[in-house]
Each structure stands twice: as C-alpha cells, then as structure tokens.
Length: 69
Image (cartoon, rainbow, N blue to C red; front, side, top):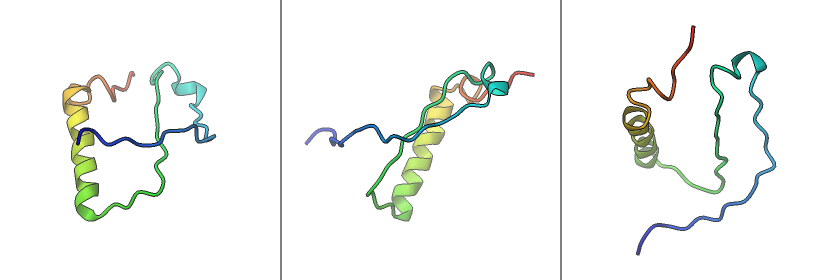
C-alpha cells in the first residue's frame, strides 16, 4: 500500500529555451517516461490531472501560462 515508487535517473536529454522568451517563461520542466503502457482511460486521467494543475496551481492558467506583451 501507499504511493508507488518509481526509478528516477538522469536521462541525458536537454531542453533549450530560446533567449527571446527566457524572460517571459523563466522556468521549464519536463519528464521522459519510458516503459509505461497507457490505455485510453489512463491517458484521460493524466490529461484531467494536468487540467486540474492548471486550474488549482496555475489559477486558471493565469500563473502558469501567462504571456507578457
């Protein structure tokens, strides 16, 4: 019981942010997930979770996806 435990290790992958948007979106994060099978229901759960993050933490995307003019 309890939360599942996953093996986490550096992937060696890199993400580059264009200098033109560095001040607009100063933070970025990503995850590379391997060897996980997604059925339609599992994918829907992940998409619903992402939407909930945008609503709750991102305050309806005002904090997480704000575009400065």
